[in-house]
Length: 141
Image 1 (spheres, helix red, strand yellow):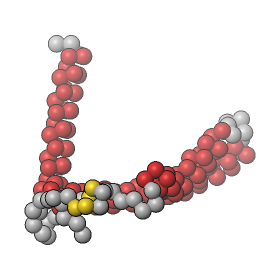
Image 2 (image 1 turned 30 degrees about the vertical axis):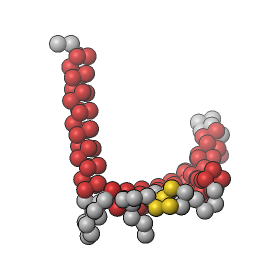
Image 3 (image 1 turned 45 degrees about the vertical axis):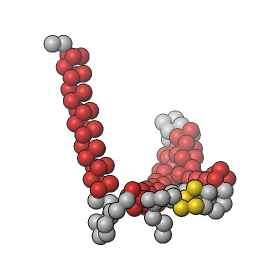
């Protein structure tokens, strides 16, 4: 058995194991999405998953702010290092860090503005309605 055959067999086993674990996580999330009430239909499960993704999006926006501030502080230190030793630290490094910081800090505004531009100002996710009418089997709050 050659090394490449051994690696490919191990990678297939590892990938299959990862897929099984992720499948178990997704199915358990769908089954136990709302532990306090009865999960009676697919609409309740869809709403719970949508709420989870909304929370994940909020967390990512907060992480974007924190990472942007971190990159900004790093850019300030790189500017100082460039001032002290311009031959070792090129000017492009702190400028790149500063541009990344600006993009990360303003990313939530860019996403909300582009979402309003594409989908309209009062658009929602559309779960549970089609042209304003309720779909059968989907609970609405």
